[in-house]
Image 1: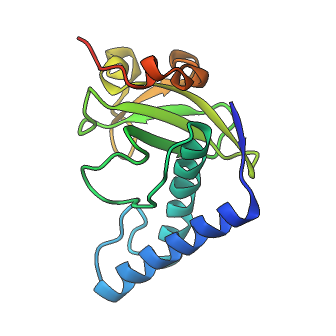
Image 2 (image 1 turned 180 degrees about the horizontal axis):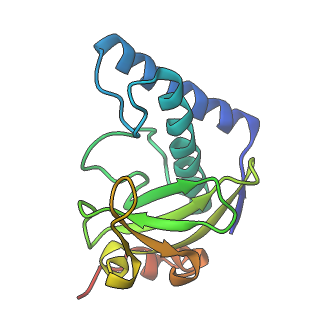
Length: 165
């Protein structure tokens, strides 16, 4: 599924990212997004996340609050979003990710055309064969072809479905 972002939508993402990074700077708070307390690196990383989240909201006709970094709240409605730059991306799932949450993988490689690659419940992705302890932060590293098609979430029954063991 491809979503094309308009200039006004891109501007909105950049404005929100800038506001959050300035807030980090003013508070002298520890950077998030693995930015090593580098204002510009944090700005760059956060932009990817915001663009991915806005693209998911647009694809599924959901409101996007732009509340990136709010711990415990889903990124878009009931969805968690992972954004990468690669054309053949992998979903990454952390130990702290809740099994019952739906994760959507987004690629921004052909920006402003953003690809919604697929989705799955985190609990279905936490398999030994995907575990990679050799990364900087050990994660499950799931290939794109292990995800469900992005178009499935257009069906309200699938979108609102619950995780079952």
